[in-house]
Length: 75
Image (cartoon, rainbow, N blue to C red):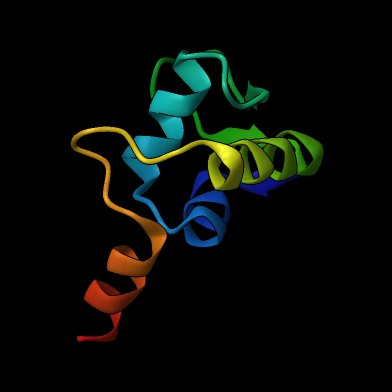
């Protein structure tokens, strides 16, 4: 199980984007606690499936390519 921070680091996105993936059903996660701001944990298998899907999915309008994101992170 991974935290949203760990998943975000592996995906190269923000923690907010990871939560969006969870809400959209693209990541399988479980909220730890019974309150709205309780942390989420993401399954490793779900994360790996999303990584594969994102590498095979052509970039859409508004979505930066992985190369552009890596270049941006280097600066």
